[in-house]
Image 1 (cartoon, rainbow, N blue to C red):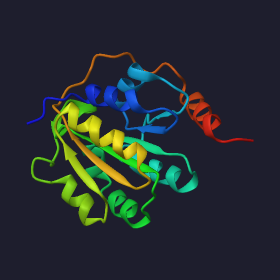
Image 2 (spheres, helix red, strand yellow):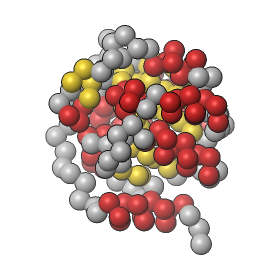
Image 3 (cartoon, one colour):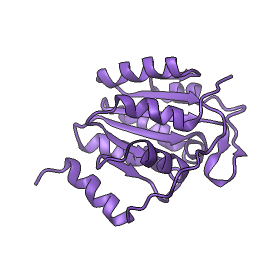
Length: 187
């Protein structure tokens, strides 16, 4: 059983992220990412639950940039078709990190169905190279390797339900959008 918290997972990821584009799931994941490492190349989802992986897929298909998506198990379950589409399209510049805390963290930690739905098996059934990690050391090793590879990867990072007490994102949504776009679209 993992003892990682989502914020620990985000800290590990952002320790190794350099120029990659990062898309973060709605609610606490985005607020925690903002707290850990705010940067122009982070796109904070402020709505549209279940669509971080789809936005990441669209970006990966439209750019040569490496794209890292930080998603949640509840959001992936809500939009299960995204895994099928990602597996079909197979962008070699996409890393999808699913924080699996078996809870809807941003709405009060109500349980999700990952207590009996194995997201690694689902991703593999969609033709995706997927792995589940339960420790910070495993996550760091797998993520560092994925950043160097030129292939699609899904990492399911097991975590405990926990929301770090962090402030709200104080950047207006339109500014988040434009600074993100400006960070990689060259005129």
